[in-house]
Length: 239
Image (cartoon, rainbow, N blue to C red; front, side, top):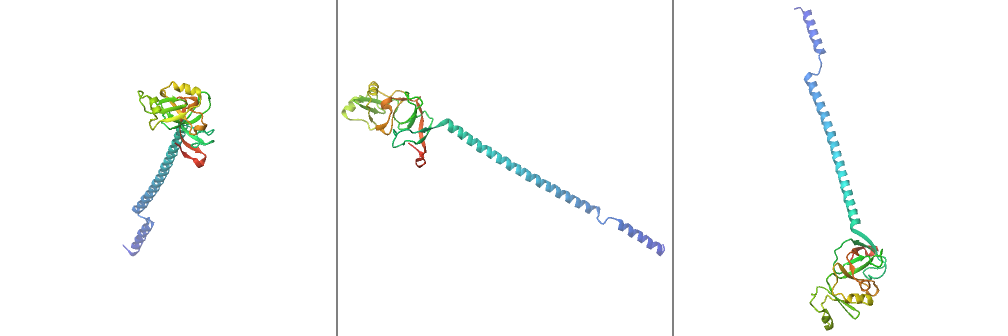
């Protein structure tokens, strides 16, 4: 082969090499797969962020719903089990004063010395607040204008002899009753009847209570006073 032909062949080969892509196919494939991986990774991160936001939003919604339900149940429970009472008068001085606002728990379980509110039979629509002194089954005895109330005393004990002798249990309550109709009624009663209570105002000299209106039945009692919410300087539980 002559020199001219050799040069021509070399030029043709060089031209073919120059026409080839400078990037080998393998390299192009690698870069393409890397870009795909980056895109997929970016998409996954976006999906994770979106899912995380959705989860947090759901938790927030659940928490708000739970708080609302607790609040609603508490309000319903309060309305069903409590009522307000306005103190009108001075029959419970010094425990309560005129104008005090009280919370009454609508309970039918009463203990001695509980403060209760009740509706008097002769004054429908009114509500009195008094303290429970006598419970069902307590022994009572009337002598002159005095009522003797004794708790947990057997029926075979002659209470009149104890009174005459001046020997009375420490739990005895002696109450002066001025109203003759009430005295006549109580003289024929040996003990407080079932589901009835003897109530008194803490201010004995200025109170309309069982000394004048007689026993109070459990059906008349509205509930037990356990909280004063006004005035604010005497805010708190009461007993």
